Amino acid sequence: MARPLAPSIVVVGSSNTDMVVKATRLPAPGETVVGGTFLMNPGGKGANQAVAAARLGGAVTFVAKVGDDVFGQQAREGFRQEGLDTSWVLTDAEHPSGVALITVDEHGENCIVVAPGANGTLTPDELQRAQSSIAQAALVLVQLEIPLETVARAVALAQAHGVRVVLNPAPARTLPDELLRHVSVITPNQTEASRLTGITVHDDTTAEWAARALHAKGIGTVILTLGAQGALVHHEGQTWRVAAPPVEAVDTTAAGDVFNGALVVGLAEGRPLRDAVDFACRAAAVSVTRMGAQASAPRRAEVDALQS
Image (cartoon, rainbow, N blue to C red; front, side, top):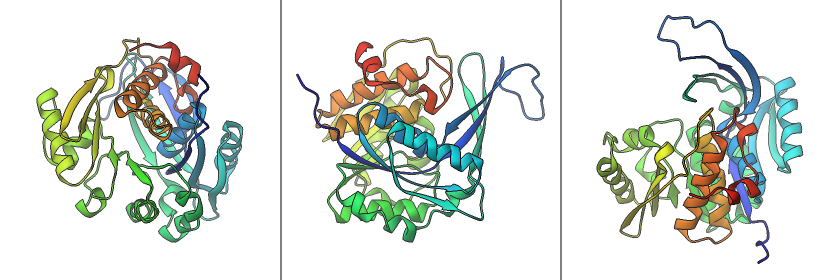
């Protein structure tokens, strides 16, 4: 069977350069851990998700802002090589490109500190310029590494044109109910779900409570990502789990971003929700088996070959 034509997806979000140290363990506060491998990779939640979606078959337009520096130039070139439409990737002449400092331990767990730079200066009025692309999209995907008012404008523009919005509420923060009620699909992890609902998520029961609480805020579909345990979905009054295939994790950086990029591709192609989430779980599982953020995003054939 021939694959559907590439769906049109708009990703609004951040672009960073990731500076990664892989060490035996994560340092405690005030501690220095000596010995490790240094890597520098393109990253940023928005860029990671845009690249992941493009590699999996989406026709992706990326809306972002980078600095007028070498990191910004490298990011633009990387986007072009990945086939992204960069018509709305803007340049900030006054602020540097975003940077993330990441430590990864021998089990693949990580801790991250981000200096947003130009990401923090993407304004609602600048986003407005991309209205024509948003109006023609099958889906709009946003995260929270850009100003909240800009996220809100993206949601409002999509709603005005009848376009579904997928919100990945990361990094974790409190969000106004007025914004949430206009979101079609939300994809928090356990920490983010806890922050949004006040419910500490630590097992299936509390995950379902949090999902129902988010649904009660007006969100049609809630997908809690549970790492190696897959995802919990709440949709139209039903709740179910989607398993992730077992893999040996090397680096969990950007696994959530790959999940979201794959999810919007699956949804934009018209897959049933259960199938789209399964596709996203498999894509994320492939990504954790190798180092890097965008570098870990898989190609379509790799995901299709991995069974849940």
